[in-house]
Image (cartoon, rainbow, N blue to C red; front, side, top):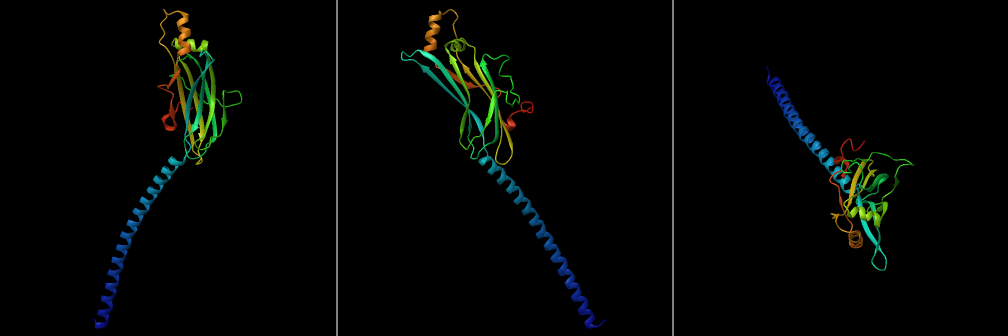
Length: 224
């Protein structure tokens, strides 16, 4: 074998080894780039979810109780306003609501559910809520007769369901149960004592132990 042939073989070997090294480096870099791309996709999804969470509409109930009295401070009635508030940074779409309520509902409202009942004959309505916007959906008057029932311990309840979409096209549900309460009443007291209690009573409310949820907190059955 001549020197020229030996030189050519050596050169070919060097080129081959260089190619193997280059391929190894390229494959290593390709693996690093693939990992980086996966991390970028994950970070992008997290950023997208964070953006949606910050920017989406979020609808929750509000409660306002106001007494109306005459010039002698005698109670005429209590007015209960229950509304919806969008605490999110963007508007709602396809907002709809339905509700029920009354004094001492049967069966127990704690285990009652509000099903989808949207339509022209259903109690409720539809509308639009801008960011930080509010709308009253229930305006109920509690006269002295109803207040007597509440003071005697018969709670008044309002149950509602709200369905809407955010600007990202995702559907949401909010359910609420508001309990207006009084009592305890001593049955040995005369009616005159009841009248005095009605005039001096401050109507209060709390949210029920059940039937208050939003989105994934509501069960599949609750969502219909």
